[in-house]
Every structure is written in C-alpha cells, then in structure tokens.
Image 1: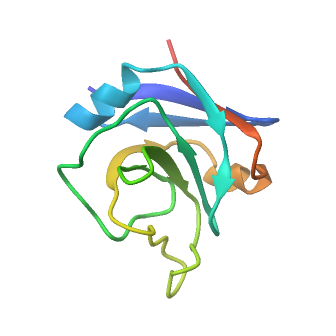
Image 2: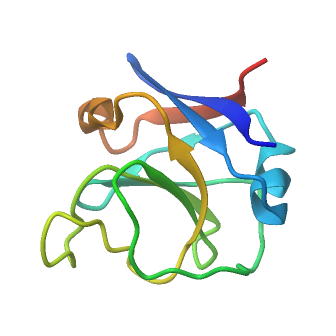
Length: 124
C-alpha cells in the first residue's frame, strides 16, 4: 500500500506518496530524516540514510516523480528539465528508481534553495 509523506524545505511543504516496492519501503522505514538540498536544473537531490542498489532503473522520469539515485545515496525530486534534458522532461544524471510521486503542487519546489535543510517525514 502507498504511504503518504511530507517533504519540507524552508517555507515549502509538499505532499507525496511512496510506492509499494521493496526499495520505497526501505526508505520509508528510515523516516524521518533531514539533509541538505542540492539543485541540478529543476531537480532537488539530497543524501539519505539508505544505501541500496536499484531493481527498476529508468533513464527518464516524469515531473513530480521521486527517485532514488544509488550512486549518491540520494532521493531526487524532479519538477522540470535537468541540464541534460532535451525538452521539458526531466532526465536524471544516471539511472534512478522511481520510489514515489509528489501529490501536491510540485512547482512549489522552485522556491527551494541549494544548501537549505530539507526533511522527509511519514504522514500519520
């Protein structure tokens, strides 16, 4: 069953859901955690306390997707094109596994600045 999460950075709060997959479950079970937001185009990525391989690697994602990037042990929030995108579609730096989806207005993520604290918590 999908589990709801809240992502907070400064004044920005977005809602999301984690998918019903082993990796998404592993990440959810580590909540809550706080990290430093880093930006790469219209992607926010930040290190999380989960180290894992990925079972379903994808090279292309949708706006609003939440991905796990194994190379950096990072959660990635995609809300627009990245520096290697050809159009509006977000393209990760390398393969990620989509572990969730932002369910509120992902354009709010435009307000997040690099270096800002970002936290993810389960929504009870």
